[in-house]
Image (cartoon, rainbow, N blue to C red; front, side):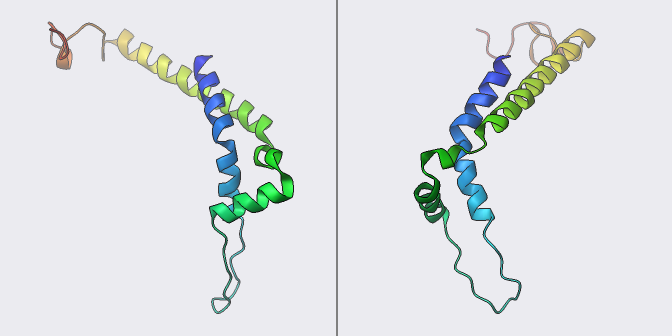
Length: 110
């Protein structure tokens, strides 16, 4: 649950940057090499998006993206925890042992 919330929060904060990135990538490439086209940078794409669609244009489609981020991040964190549990259960790694499976204090123990 915490992993899903972390992923959804991160995606919600960075979604406007992703909209600008998509706007930069959406610019057309000329079909012929001899044609010159003036591409706009991120600042100009952001300015144009702000002037045409306003603040909410930066967050158009944020709901489905945040829902997807919640599911993907939650499943990644759950998978990581599950694999970690299996490794500890099988003896590949365990908490409390020293470096490289040796008994005794760990590398950060005094």
